[in-house]
Image 1: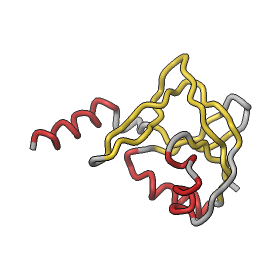
Image 2: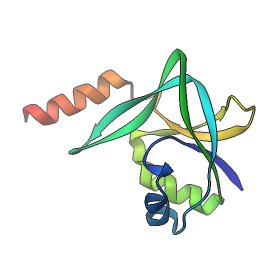
Image 3: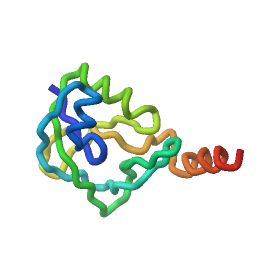
Length: 117
């Protein structure tokens, strides 16, 4: 099983059921050095983890199979990057964060250009 830190829509059992076909129980945990921000994808605003020293993001750790993790990768799209992280509890888990290769200023520029066109 894979451990996944979720902090936004994937905390919702209805979303879990839609994405991986079942709801899973989570355990509270914290990811240090990150803050929960927002990203607009199309006309919808979603949470996203951004690197921010001194910050903490609260969420849940869920256990998923490798196949379920791939389904979640597809759900998250390339607007997020899956990275291994060590949580405050000491557990290692995957987390979907702001991509290093797609900094926030590029995201803002991308949506500004879409807005202007």
